[in-house]
Amino acid sequence: MLLAATPGEEHTLPLDAVAAALTARGIGFRMLGSSVPPLALAQAHRRLGPAALLLWSQCRATAAPQLAADLLNLPFGVAGARHSPLLLLGGPGWRAAGTPQAALRPASLRAAVDLAVAARDVFVAPPAHAGAGRRWR
Image (cartoon, rainbow, N blue to C red; front, side, top):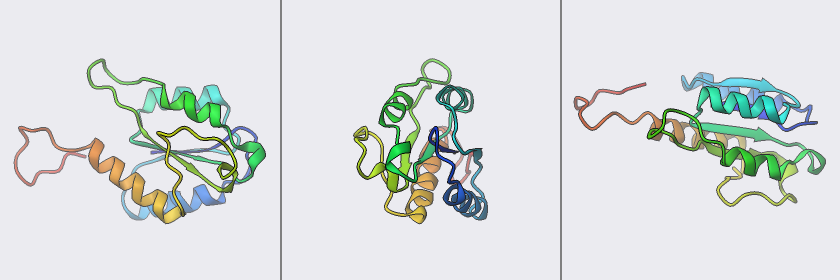
């Protein structure tokens, strides 16, 4: 999972809370921090191939609907095995912003963590030939 604040957004305490909750559940993540430039976010997305991406915006001025739409259209991974991560738009800044339909706006930080866990579980589902009861993580 990737955690990042939109360009110009300096509030990261909510991302720190999500990071703590993910750690408690044993979920790996990368914290990119505050005011992440679009190019850096796109490169991290492409290189890491996360199951989910939480993009935080505290205020309307930092919501970036075009960035969200662009992230949904970035391919990554080996041809034939590509997927799109679950894009979570967190924070009150997204309320008034037009957001892509494929993105989700969790109602709370807890909901964001629950969605990230669900996305990870789908992304790391065992291959069809894997032994019964064996988890691939």
